[in-house]
Image (cartoon, rainbow, N blue to C red; front, top):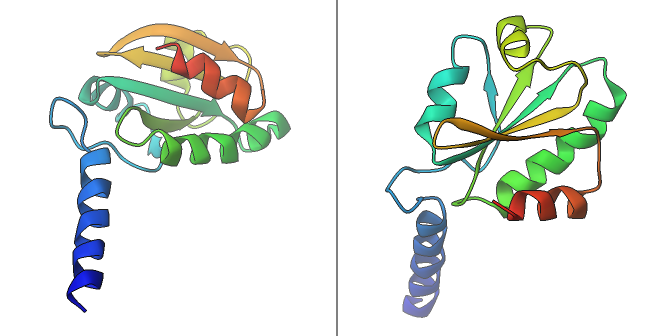
Length: 132
């Protein structure tokens, strides 16, 4: 019984450590839905943020969405992911000149450092993100 409890505690401790970035800010394990009013504070809150800009009617966006969900789990503790519906949040879409979707906006310390446009497989997207 004690061995089982110790193993559970060890695994939970590892999960907690993975969910905390180097500066002590807990990173989410799922993409957070963003809006015009929450966008700026979210990208400022975490050291590394990737925002999936999409629309519900967009078929390539629907292909990228589960990949972003998986990457959020795979990269927990390193990157925070957000999702922004450009039909509902047109101010952010205009600010970052999003003309094609899906578009992934990559932020470091609140500054836009890259824009990834179009659907791609998980391995290709992960390798692009790993560069940061």
